[in-house]
Image (cartoon, rainbow, N blue to C red; front, top):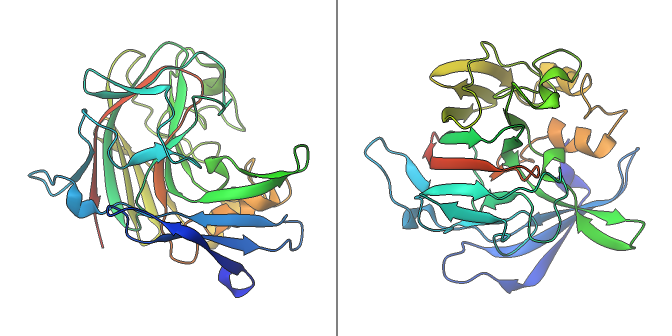
Length: 287
């Protein structure tokens, strides 16, 4: 569904600094069917030309020394519970689950990608849970309790590559089939096969490739998941998950048209309340 056909666009007054490529805007999508009114926020983006390209043609978007290009989802800064430690991007979790409050929250790289290959290393501590998001958008919903507009979780607009301690976290045994929430799986939708994750406190390599709607998840040198966005199979898959049209109409609309009409969005890393590490984060544009 083309949201722009019935949306209202408001350009915000302030633009980004020299490193940004556009002014911010908010697109208001009126309530329709069972979907509540929501706002799509398009913020200024960083210029990839400012980032190093390695010998394999990948942009190094986290070099282990700075948060350049990163900020919190729905925020203008990196939450303080994210830190840089021994060249790694670390979330300093306290076991609070998906609280997303105060000094925590998911983080995103400030550039929307369309066709790309993302490479990263990840490591979790015992019983830790996290995730990598692709093609995400920043979405606001009206919060009836507080009577204010608030950012909805990124997972309602972005498929998730699961990051998990498979041996000790209870999520590994949950879901409609065993494995559907284990590492490298498409969270709650497709099981990663083979399941070749290393134990907690050991490093794993991850890969997410997106090209013209085909998405592949890789883990430790093997492709373990494949799916195809914007197809009937994708819609059917959503309708058998927690993001179905019946269970979550807004998430279903956003995920069924993941990346919006331009088929592009943010990559992000999840605060699930646990200690997790990422490093060697690189991306190659496949356009």
